[in-house]
Length: 292
Image (cartoon, rainbow, N blue to C red; front, side, top):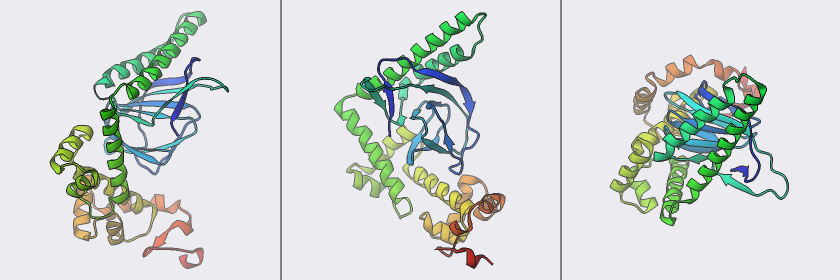
């Protein structure tokens, strides 16, 4: 569900500022009662309402009120956040913003706008009158920011829009197939693009190679299975597309710096919080009677 904004009225800012990401794993879920704009100073992966996006520093995400989002970030940092309300009455003209927008060279402009909105929202003023003026200016700047994001999404040529669709299709394909033996060549064939061109464009877009991205997806899934199931290390490796236990151990260490077994031991407390019915043994669901 995209973020729907009122094209006429001013939004009401709940809070704004620069905050650190405290929970960088998919195991922790955020759900905010307000709309949210996040402009990132780091890169990673985010799931918004079950849909996953890879983002880099300078990108922005737009989350409607009440929608769940979770993160998987290797090196968390800070992000600029604006929480706001934007009521829409019957008959009001609206526009929509997608969950993820790659800002590219526009990132600096929108970051400065987020900073200014935060300063206006948080800086104490001598009188309530001045405070009201500051909040009115912040609301107008936020409305301009939302409209600018909408314009940015529609100012590109048909070719640019087609290219964005290709990236979304490619990431969906990786999300669906990463547990299988996929490669850059296989993906390039599916996307009808030369492997060398895909590699070059992917590195420019996401700051890593296709294989590195696939590896990260596999290790992220492995981390989740290690902390939320009792599958064996070998079973987990097979489940994420790395059936060779030694190679899985090597790949996991390369990303996390520790072995899968040590990661599981350090995070064992998470399994204790999972209901018995959800735990698995040798690929089968366990019933409460089988736990003794």
